[in-house]
Amino acid sequence: MNQNYLFTSESVSMGHPDKVADQISDTILDFCLQHDPKSRVACETLVTTDYVCVAGEITTTAPLTRTVVDKLVRGIIREIGYVDPTIGFAADTCQIECKLHSQSPDISVGVDGGGAGDQGMMFGFACEETKSLMPLPIFLAHRLVENHAKLRASGKLKFVRPDAKSQVTIEYKPDGTPNRIHTIVLSTQHDESVVEIKKKKKVFSDKAREEILNTLIIPTLKAERPDLVDAKTKFHFVPVGESGKKYPTDVILCHINPTGIFLEGGPHGDCGLTGRKIIVDTYGGMGRHGGGAFSGKDPTKVDRSAAYMCRYIAKNIVKAGLASKCEVQLSYAIGYPDPINIWVSTFGTAKHGLTDDKIAALISKTFQLTPKGIIETLNLRRPIYKESARNGHFGRELANFTWEKTDKAAALRSAAGLK
Image 1 (cartoon, helix red, strand yellow):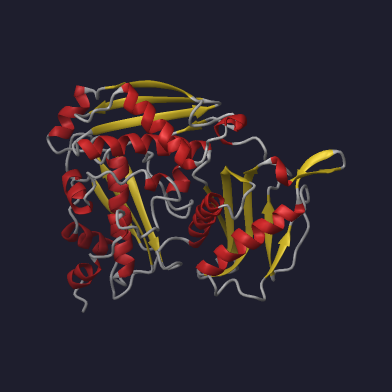
Image 2 (image 1 turned 90 degrees about the vertical axis):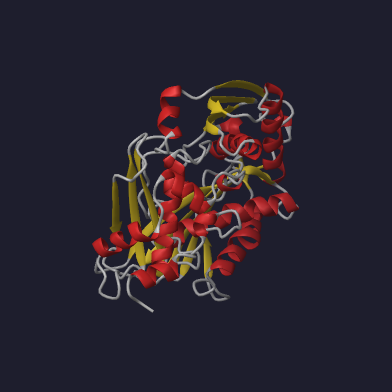
């Protein structure tokens, strides 16, 4: 490209229906791993108006009774913040249906021998746009919904409800580096206290929009990218229904509840399913995504564990200074331990005379890539997954997220013959 361009990524809050489903599935997975680290779990969840259905295949010695499932589901719904029965979905009033059974022995036989739990291809991505080596649009989108939940829980944004979505558009320079924040979209479910009547219609109040801008959006952007947002930065509310107008390039455009109102939301407003937010879970579209979702799957499922390993590899390559941007693919056959392929693209950013092929060779020498090796390297047989089901699986350097470590950077440099 020889001109500036725009790229957009979105995120969704912990109260979004699909994320509610993800968190329920991973809460059940965590319970199983807590009691039996070798549990085999493939748990799917559906949520809608005052209803939860948990289904799938689980083989475990954990005491996963019908009563325990009920308690786990209601507990995570309460933690997310759905406690008011009047909005159509609440921890104490929802009906819970359990359709769990044991895993197919045809799958188990391959996994028991150390093979992959399924076929498929997985990708990992890292770049220098943020300290966490994540693309800037998805990183900022995650932080907006993460802080939305914190402000809701603390009472600093009293009128918001758990369901919310964010979207961030970044203008990039021709060389692929961020130039400015172009547009922010923030949609949040809210209560009646911020509804006013305009032209005989109920609408989200301008005062509430200002509060979201000043309490959530501006502080989040300043905290994460003060080089792109300072005291002189101007923000412009785009009026509801306006389109086609050209704006000056020195403002950040803000669409806050652009439909005009968002009273009905959560699982009552939209059915939620496990695994339906796979681009939110990964790199916001900046990097590729493989064939499978993550939540509800134990680490023998390479859809999840190998995707974590790909992120770990890509992040260490960038941290090691071997490239400024890196994407890694691994692929597997069910029941077979070694990856079918290792593919690398550094998008022309490889350094020190390295090529993508040479970096791929370094990967095979530096990392354990069998399912067993991945699980051991990243210590994945632990109850750590509920937290990953909200605010993104990547880009947060939590103690439990071992795939975010850069402890292999030195080994990669050494293998490449660099000091």
